[in-house]
Length: 450
Image 1 (cartoon, one colour):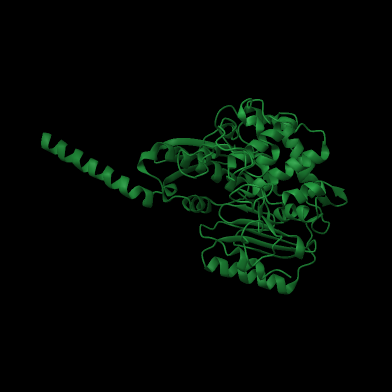
Image 2 (image 1 turned 30 degrees about the horizontal axis):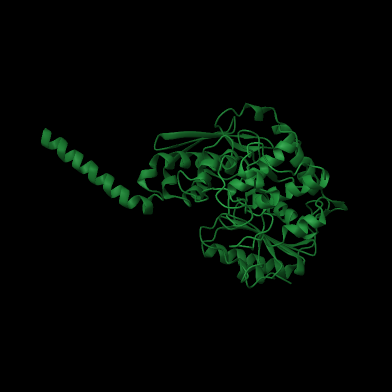
């Protein structure tokens, strides 16, 4: 018996050693991060499956395929959909149970901590207008040659395994071509991931436009009574705050804790120490954007309802964005770094607002000077090609996309979400999808320029 037990223990030890060696390749994480990995996996699973089902209308199969693109381990997720209360519960081989709940107008929020304040938040749905796009949703300016080219690109993309779900071109303020993948329509809200950063910056700009006297003084947060008091709004907008933040998307990192395990997404960055002088060094940080969301929240009433009201009244309603949901964390603050779902047409509206120097239907929603400043390179020592939460094509030693106009700038998100704004050609382009591979942005978009 003793020999059998020793043999069994040796086999188990051998399997653990083998798993520790193979886990990074087979599972996508180190075995030493198993505890964190389970919680991240179930948090991601519950959150994305909830939004996928109740916002985008995706099937369980599509949700699971999307999740598995991040780690094969996500194939082991058990996702339980409660369609009556609109909640998804996720476990990974029986461990790490996490749930997310859908609320109209707010989308899906992880059930972490006390989220009861969200239950009382109300919104008024934006009804589609029959007016011509962009004021409404009637499209009458499709250009056959552009439409054919777009459909060919979509087909080529998906034959190459790029999983493109939507492509759209706006030229001279008119929607001239749009193409959609299987199961996707012009009304389907799709996740923009980090394109939400650009929208968050636009919300800062909108707040400054409607309230020029808004408090921009430093420290930006009362918690920053130390050397962080020197961080300016421009430092946050340009990702040069100097704050420590681990943006790697691995179990246990700041980014994964923030998105998949935290009640308040902004708390991690709010507590982060300063490691570099503000303004000196560009460091891409989703935590920084969620600080911007927290700053907005504090200045528009500091309640979930006042926060959502500001977004609806100042952004969604004026732009007629009836197929957009900006999701909040458990405290009612928008997760500006990542969680916005919008149709391709609504994403194009945001790009067009920037292209039109902040003017929309006769109203100046963003100050023209703010729009200009948003496109200027930052003054960091390492990566100047970043404006106010927008990626710039120029400003450094070389163009980001040599095939595209120098003055073009971009909203960019994980899985190759793209909105390009090109002032010199008066063009906006949108690409939405779920690509693990790099998307040929320069090559494809260049074919569609006038």
